Length: 264
Image (cartoon, rainbow, N blue to C red; front, side, top):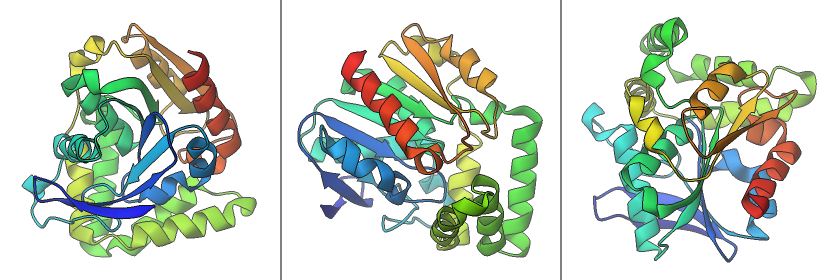
């Protein structure tokens, strides 16, 4: 179920591999791990073969030392190599937040590998988030340089799971993020914020589902705007949900995903 593999590019990935049938590649968010998908595994693996890796720089996968060994294009390469090693020729890809950026990158560079694309609370151009993006870079850089990862982990987990009944979710996410070495987190973050596909989004032809939380950091309107640039896409909004929709509204999320895969 939990396996580790050294890829031909030298990166070692730990990944979950469970279920049978068509493959679904689940890509987690920045600073987290494959545990972002804990509430999807049982439901999805009843119908599909679920592959959920720890991304480069995260979890129990390789954590390179230098900034030039990070970036969305390299993470995309890792996951294409992983699926090739597993003998999987085509797959559904589901990317949450930073994982969504990687999913977009694969859809642009290797479109024939993807049968359906699902992007979750993400954007195709992290390098074009305007004032919000600039503030995020400034604030997170300052925190990491002055006080380290733990205060940032606390800030992020509290903003994602602020409700009293979300205490366990908040604590679990905090523990995941605080384990990140400052260097690998910063390099993953800053290279993400430099990434974007720009006009290439119009080249994405694969059936695409854009999932947006009604209380995400970026508005639903942003997701609707970029979805319109793809000729074969639709948007589904999850209510009473913030950024971590796979965790804070798993029943709604799972239903939306499975309906899209079965019926569209």
